[in-house]
Amino acid sequence: MHNILESLQIRSLNPSFSTGLTWGTTQEREVKAIHSPIDGKLIASVCMASAEDYEQVVKQAQAAFVQWRNVPAPKRGEVVRQIGQELRLHKEMLGKLVTMEMGKILQEGLGEVQEMIDICDFAVGLSRQLHGFTMHSERADHRMYEQYHPLGIVGIISAFNFPVAVWSWNAMLAAVCGDVCIWKPSEKTPLTAIACQQIISKVLKENNVPEGVFSLIIGDARIGQQMAEDERVPLISATGSTRMGKQVAKAVAGRLGKSLLELGGNNAIIITPQANIESAVRATVFGAVGTCGQRCTTTRRLIVHADVYDQVKERLLQIYDRLPIGNPLQESTLVGPLIDKEAVKSFTQALEKVQQEGGKLLTGGNSLEGSAYISGTYVKPAIVEAENHYLTVQEETFAPILYLIRYEGSVENAIALQNGVRQGLSSAIFSTHLQETEAFLASSGSDCGIANVNIGTSGAEIGGAFGGEKETGGGRESGSDAWKFYMRRQTNTINYGKTMPLAQGIKFEIAP
Image (tube, rainbow, N blue to C red; front, side):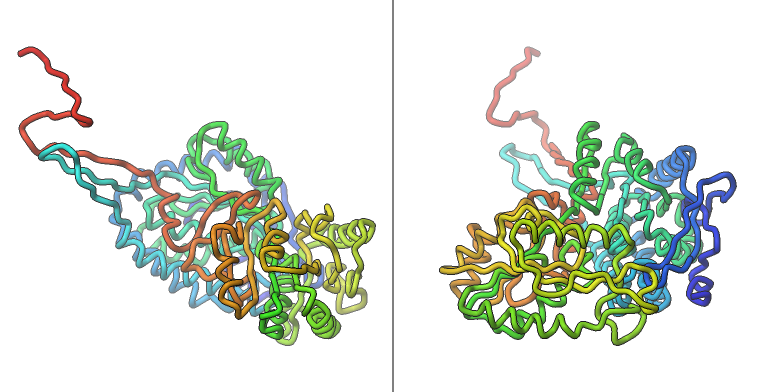
């Protein structure tokens, strides 16, 4: 652990904020200790930001934006390219720190850093493609076009489950668009954020990037609320629970700001009789227990046709019975710990409630004890036979609980079950039948922002826009044309003639 912290410049006590190369004080600040969910041991401590710290960060960001928006976009892209290179050099150490602080297995920790590298590559290309549109005017000797301008300060509120990737999705796109960013990471995982700030500092210094383009502030929900209510921050990108997102949306809407929300998911996989059962089961297991069920794209419901229901159930129970659970830094481990004991409590309470509603616990559901599980945050992933209308099934429990749901008849019946929740993030169908898969992808099919065929609900690539509908928030991050949300749109009309015609043929004659 010491080598990892030293290489990433994590101190025993870390300041509450940074505006790039400048760091805040550690004097007279509330201190929060960060313990690893792996073994409960102290990793390091952080200072929590005050209202005064926040004010200093915002003012520095305001000053930086005035300069940064005038830097040509390809040159902004060059800075992002170099950030991607630094992340490549630090991939192993940062990936290990993600695992130590959050608890996901090392392969997923390394994968998260690779996502950061990939989004840097995407943003570099984007920096030469921030295109507008031209259109024909109805008036002679007139030209019309649309262009996009930098928006200003982007406030990024990220969650503990992807402690660094979500920041990069937002920050790298915002940077090439000419915006500046203030990042408030989850107070549960601030050390990886500090590590990212240290990693990019070399690039910021070598390129004379204005102080305040990439800022970091460590705080609890009060800082997040302050950011959401701040009229100087035109865009808030928030990732987390639906409850949190509703609070942010209300605050931002109250000042007519923009919010980009990535909230809860209650994701389902449909398995039809025409599915490749083994592929479907393997995708389900990764989706259900990966990151110990703490992904917004986690597979929480498995909707299986009655004809193959028993076959799927039997295969799942075989796999769940021998899942390697333990230290996520060990190569053989597939399921690490939950983030903390509160998450364990939510896990056990949800299982109690669903059984009271009529659900049948098939396997798992218990907390693990012993010297290998000393932190008290390890659980055995659970499978529950349930019905879609159960209140517990309708909610997102951020833990490894898979609800097994039977359907009969046509695929439309399965789609109706899948859509029958308030969330709409990710969805998938396993079928080799063209009509079934096309029905799933049609406008009358899946109502989710992500709809996959013959792959699971987890593991989105950065090339496509990421996000969902309904209580998932409607936001889109990462690839495709998500960059437009970080800019303001402007329509321009140029009259290069010598007369002044009006649109719609309006006559407005002024006497000479």
